[in-house]
Image (cartoon, rainbow, N blue to C red; front, side, top):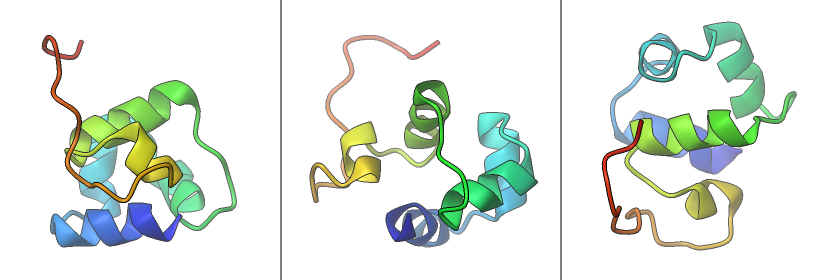
Amino acid sequence: MSRLKDLRKERGYTQIKMQHLTGIDQSDYSKIENGKRYYTFEQCRKIALALDTSMDYLSGLTDEKKPYPRSHSPK
């Protein structure tokens, strides 16, 4: 989960800012960041969008931070 924390800090975001961007409660977000809780698919999607990265990067499947080109605007 260090990628999540590192990327958030690179963007200059606080956990409270992430709460506003994702709708994930700050205490739950903190648990996700610290590896005490896993995120759902939908939470991972929201976090990836907020941090302008891919779900693959967050999960460690790629080292490329830049997100894939999107075919349409996320809902």
